[in-house]
Length: 551
Image (cartoon, rainbow, N blue to C red; front, side, top):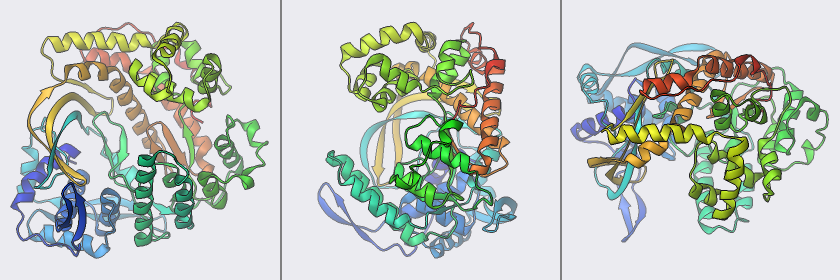
């Protein structure tokens, strides 16, 4: 399997060599530019480039899977016939062929079947092998606008193909009332005062509605996942994804309906949506589900057999750091140890007299990943002086800042000595390569390419190392959870969704896997790989038993 960056580099080589590229039935459309409206005739070429990258990243696909992937990656209505045309064109051009390689996929009836996959021909396989691993590229087309950007790094898959295949195999469908939910969400969006946000959300809804109209609400689709450079998993594209706003979370359901609904877990989830802590006792108190009009609750109450019941980490960054640094009191506040649920955001709000829980969350979440004072001021809408007052007190009872300052100091010394990138390997073989660089970028639509000589951003390298290590641990944790679950799972970083009947098993797997990561002393292991020093001692892994760690 190619990395996304390698796939991008190879498609740059392949694309100019392809002859007589058809339009694949994509009609020219007018697009607005700085100089007015122009006729856009490159839709077919863009679609081919997107398809080629999807094929390379996943080492193959079949027509109906490619159709789903193209819809989610490009936000365009793509017919199955177009996917078949792309298939035939790439075969005729000698780029790919169908050989004995197969993948397993669950069909609409729940059966596991083996499917033929696309495979690069020897000529292009050799080109991919010869592509330098330090070449960092994304999807591209020839004529583009120029701007400046920066490159975040790359990651090498190691032995993680199994996780991607498992995630890609989760069958999904749209809620039967998805189109009416789009209309309802649009009405809510119209109440927003922020004009830019309102326009952006309207465009999102329009694209989502278009995909639903083309694809239908009963046909199964799959999301195509990748691992970004730190090893965190996300779906390619940005139109249809489980990693979106409330509308997307409400309309995306499991294709497979469970035979037995655990109503207690359904009530607990509903309670969390209504603002409770989500304890077993709360489940007995939820009698307002029928009165709730939120989209997620509407989705849950109308079709609980297909709705993902989500368990989210409690201030996940602080969970990891407090555990690795041996801070049991802080770990208790974020539900790592103990046996009762705590809400760190509410306690933070009360302690510092903030407006509401949401304001507290906008402070705590970036704080847990080492955000700067400037970011905290902007996120929480507080004065610099007030942020200083909170931080001075916070460092006394939640001293996680020691971790960020420690790593930044070591990183700065390494950069002064000429280090241009930081590398570390996770237990499953995934290699993180952190290298922040500035470069010139040319863009057109959804596709872009980096050009020119890159300049290493030392300040970014130093400040990003500590949070990126935590992100990489978080990504490894997610992959291990996916490997252990023998049931459909939807994941969004520190959020895990499954059928209600599997929630209790998922809770157990989450706690056990978290404990295993701490037992392995993974943070100190990574720091040693970097050649740095640390002497942090983790909290006693035996204390990690709180069932509300994810809730």
